[in-house]
Image (cartoon, rainbow, N blue to C red; front, top):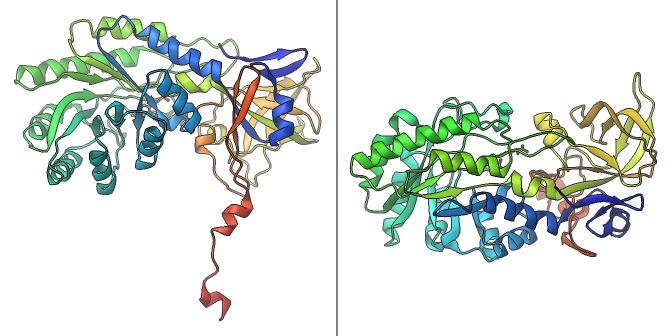
Length: 421
Ligand code: LLP
């Protein structure tokens, strides 16, 4: 459920007509609904409420906007970060260092050192090599880094190949068969406190069976480690729960997910950790765009909008579907291809799609754009970096300014050897 609805024929974010935001800020612009974010944060937490000990770390990568992080901090969320940049955002939003999990397959020495210094709550180690390096870094600072070992369970999450992470051909984690030996070796290093295991098999998961399979395997590994006298007090089950992108699409709910975890983990006696991203932010945002032109096509008309693949990369990268709707729908429909202005054919949002009829100058939205939207934006074709707005009832505020091409140009230099040949 979200708070983007038609009121008096105009699409609103909560009580604010999107026309008002577009007029004031220009397009394209991302618009987030505070009420939707809050609702999703609570629904997810409530779905896990029956579990005895939990820690929820919001996957910052899905939407790292400072205002979004602040809201989630106020809802009691920790953060799952994958870079020093994300770590600093989470800290800036007021999330306690101890509530931050540092994930990621390529944490640099510099990042590890900063994170140890900041007192990050848990490092999810992706390899033995990383563990050895972190142990040295922590020991040099006179500290012990608290860690979980990320394990690759070799389970197919049955999602898009580019966002699947739990198969042995994916770069993530240590192989399941070697995990016990690696855990034991790392647990012996004085700079580390090994306390748990971590798993994350993929994103936009629409079928919970692979998750069940992975979690069961992790439970067995935990028992094996404990059997060897090793401490395993924490189990990080990652993120990945999918969201509906098409109206009417049915996906497992947070309650279904919570029930699965409760069943699989019933005798684990461990603190369960979660790293949800998309399920919190996905349906909390839309990308507002203006129709530039409607161009005749060989079969269907081309609706050229002023948003492009640089603003919302998901369709180009993962063939992702985002519902498209007019901000002032006339009731008429058309079949069209929806494209952005960028000079490559991957800048396509939809082909032969039945949509609200639109004409040049009309406003429209791409829905479910709150996760992996603005955060993946870039400035390809020397376009601006897209701005972000948050709505709260009848109030709204710009939470990320548009960074225009002139600002980016101003950071570039022509070297002397070109100025004076
Ligand atoms: N934890 C780890 C270790 C992850 O790698 C990810 C996502 C998450 C948690 C959060 O997953 P979520 O709950 O959001 O599914 N750009 C792609 C998605 C990439 C996901 C990367 N990892 C997209 O737009 O679909």
